[in-house]
Image 1 (cartoon, rainbow, N blue to C red):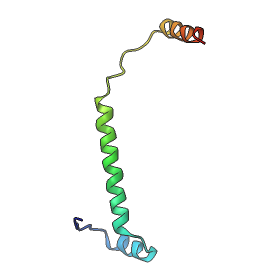
Image 2: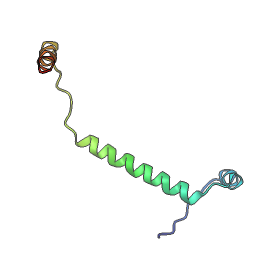
Image 3: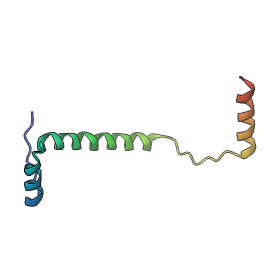
Image 4: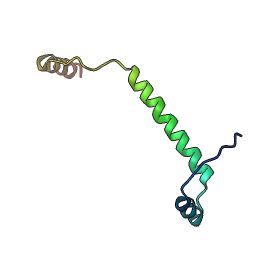
Length: 70
């Protein structure tokens, strides 16, 4: 397992110690969350641009067609 240094302001570190927080676990989870957000952003950027608007008449026709399939 890699060992890294994390720098915190003195007051934040003191508060974290006073609360008994596990800084290693918190840091790991923060990195996991950040990586997941970045992956989601990359995935969203690959989706086609939804700039094409649908005419109301086409939407209503599609809804009527779906309703007729029941």
